[in-house]
Structures are given as structure tokens and as C-alpha cells.
Image (cartoon, rainbow, N blue to C red):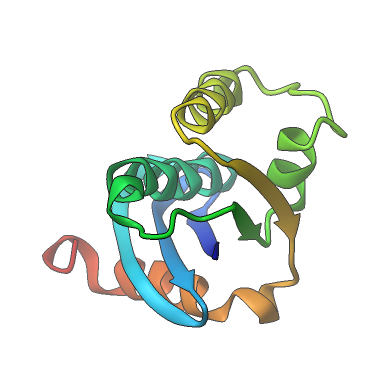
Length: 142
């Protein structure tokens, strides 16, 4: 078994009101979906926050999977984040360093390999829609 995670983050303004979301899927079935308002921050911080939220959830869910996933593929439309996590881009923005470190820490808590793949926004519609729903509805939906 393998899992797919779709994450997104967005900011209306940069920085501006921001939110993040994730969807965890197993064989096309949704296992868990969630999102969160983040307050005022940048788009890149929101993208990392969506991934961190997803990995935190995955760490808590992992023992309940039988059989346990052999791999986890995280899909994001943030080319910057994916290339940083895959070691293709350096971290130049100091605000992203602790977020990158948190992702790596969460990876270490999982007994399977995590892969990161960039996808166009059109292939990340569900996570994107959740971010936009959160940003439009405001605090009452969070």
C-alpha cells in the first residue's frame, strides 16, 4: 500500500491572510483532510505549513494502517518547496529554515520513505479549493 498526500498553502497578499490544507489518500479513498487559517504570513510559509500539518497527521495515523504504507508521495504545486525538500534548491529565506527542519524531523518519525513531487495547480485542485474556502469563510470555518 502507498499513500498520496496533496498539500497546499496560500496567501491573499504576500504577506497577507493565509491558510493551508492537506488531503491524505489511500488507493483513491480519502483518509483524512484538514486545513487551518494561519493569520498573516507569506505564501511560501503557508505552503510549508500545509505539508507540516499533513505530516503531523500522518505520524499520528501511521500505526493504524494495516498493512503499513510502503511509501508516501507528497504532491504540491509549490515548485520552490518541492525542490528545496529534494535538495535541488538551497534555502535562502531564513524564515523557511525552521519549517524545512520541522519537515525533516517529521520524516524521521515515519518508518517509510517520503517522496516529494511537484504538480501543476490543476492536479492539486482539492487542496487548493480547501485553502480558498478557508480564506473566503474566515475564522468561522477554521
